[in-house]
Image 1 (cartoon, rainbow, N blue to C red):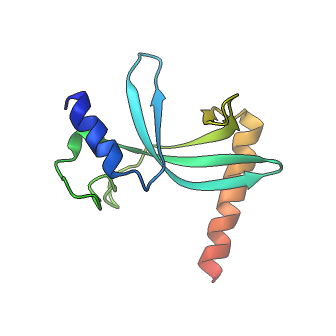
Image 2: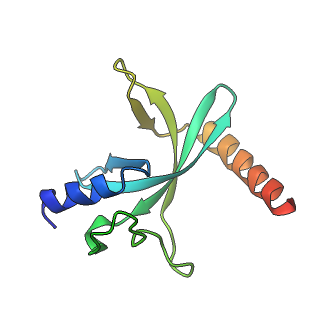
Length: 115
């Protein structure tokens, strides 16, 4: 997929929060922000990886990026900070923050299941 098609797919998903993370090898990985979990005075994003190359849709309501239930999903946690321009920056949490976010997320899921 070339950059023009990639940009069109990104624009089509504008309603969703899409995060681009560059790995250690310089590859761009795309994640959809599933939810924000507040812990203390910080916010953490639960990010699910999506694969833009697999999408062949031109529909703005494209759901090709949703994973099938039996497919393992690559999900990460990122701390949300802001740069000098007020833009969101996603950073790796510390081990302690990761454990706190995981516990908060599990509590949220338990509460939703009880409703």
